[in-house]
Image (cartoon, rainbow, N blue to C red):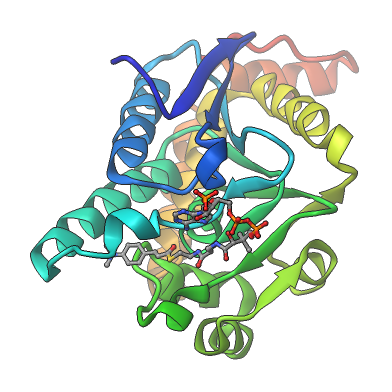
Length: 260
Ligand code: DAK
């Protein structure tokens, strides 16, 4: 696929998708979401990709929301398709069997916050801003905000943000557990890549099983969830990397993982 609204690159096992519509503060229209779906699918299916980073171009915005000019005259039928496209894409990102890092370099409003919520880890620049302002334009979040936000920051805080449409800055986002780290803007991408590199060197199958157990155990009873965890953990014992990891520990040396 030719990409017009994102920049997609892969280097040393780390894929980076950069939202690139700077004139609209990287707002997500259907074309951009389709490109994200396509690039994320490629990352999922490419064994050479170990970790994916999502970020925005420029220093002002990660994604300033769904594209309001495109949504303005949508019918409910159009809106449902747009919403389903977003859900398909974000669920793919959330459940893909490799880590996804959001490097949030500015405004992450509405759909921008929602994209970051589907990522496994969120790093924010000091100038990042978060919020679900949909209520201010007569909507509610449509790409998972009412569901993922309460799961991550708790019901009360999520309701405060969604019902008021208010924004929070990066340090408040860190305080309430919405982001994992806050970094100076000029270090955000380098630090995200450094962390990605660290993850890329770890046993890939164990990363896959960890993500699987967390994602799919979350809504189960504790009995079923711990059963799922046991099965995911047991499967790791069928990999060369598990043998190597334990052997290296006992031989007091660094492990050499081969990704099998
Ligand atoms: N959509 C379209 N264009 C946008 C945009 C957006 N979300 N955000 C910014 N832009 C455009 C502006 O219109 C402006 O374009 P020009 O006028 O230069 O042509 C350009 O980006 C620069 O923006 P500003 O001039 O406004 O820049 P400022 O620094 O003054 O303000 C801002 C930055 C981020 C505070 C402001 O632009 C802003 O408030 N933007 C809108 C933020 C927002 O409300 N985001 C949430 C959008 S609603 C659903 C699916 C998804 C969703 C809902 C339903 N279904 C299908 C049912 C999700 C909804 C949303 O995300």
